[in-house]
Image 1: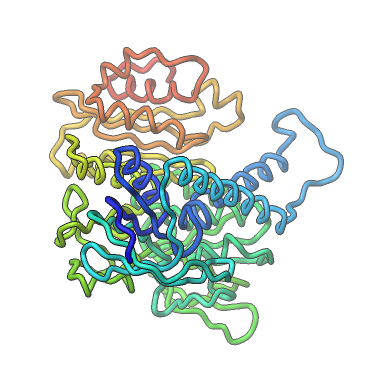
Image 2: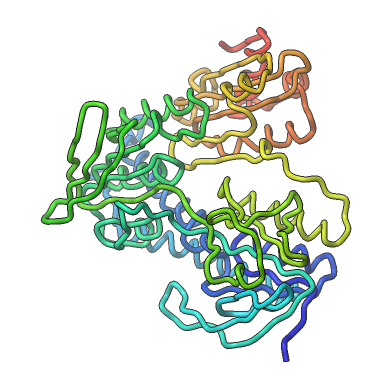
Length: 472
């Protein structure tokens, strides 16, 4: 006999487990299906452990520049690479245990194994093997009035750059390996690429970033891309843009990465290649074809409320396409179940989704870039405030970067904000909330920001946009 639920969530990443919790809070009998570890990629081999790695790199960076803080250290500081990796795993395991607790607290059944749709209201589950090589789960069947697919995504793999886990690794391999390469070529300069470039560089690996577009972090505002590239080059990270990787010669050591540029073909030698060219949705082997769920490539097609074309089947998060962000998945899942419960919910505005990159200096943004705002036909006001003019940044010893604000000239609408600097990923929430409340530039200027804080830069950039700069 199949166990029946009001809501059955397939996948327990941040989108999946938060969706399940909200469904339970709304009075639904809820279960979650997980073939690996609770928390999905984000908690186990993504967001959380990478931030632990980046913190180790940040401490290493500051430890090698103690004289800038008036401090002296006898001897030298060097990374213990396996211990750095172990610390990262500890953070992931702690969060995994936290999700287990949340499932118990909210009376959510956890069904271990690989889930596959048999029909619109039935999921068949079979044993699977988790990331530790352990077999988990058992054969069982569950039915539900509402099935929500939250199966996430996996690293994209280019045909000419196959991932073998040794010479060519994905972000997962780069995160888990305990043998540190002396040199690394990173293919792709999006968030994953530049974060691992920062980490490995400060661990002592010689790093080269190769990006096919004409700038790194190409989805960010152009000023942010320029600032990060300049900063990385000053650190000693080689950056190649407008460069197209053709393949890797593995015959002999070191490896040779073939790269096409405007100047011709180059061969970059390295010990290891990190393929950081995005992700693709996990749409395979979850029963979509059998049920008739519509897909577009590796994305499940959904409407504004995350309903698929099959009644009773929904999809959220990375499996529905870009942007592939944990907080987007969580927000989508909560909106989905609240709509199922009959709540009055509004679709997500894609321009209200913040993006964060956790290298140093950090990058955070929300809304239109300057180029997008102009293309959309807005007459705009743009303000830019450098952190070198911010007192808190000076005290912290982190004066690189800036805050850039973009306003509609006619109504004062907060069209976008783009930051690069220390703790930028914490500062962006003010702008996200401001945009949600339809706050204008005048209200930002009139809102008293505490001094000294990095947050003053948002107010100061707004003042600059309106021709009222005070501290520059």
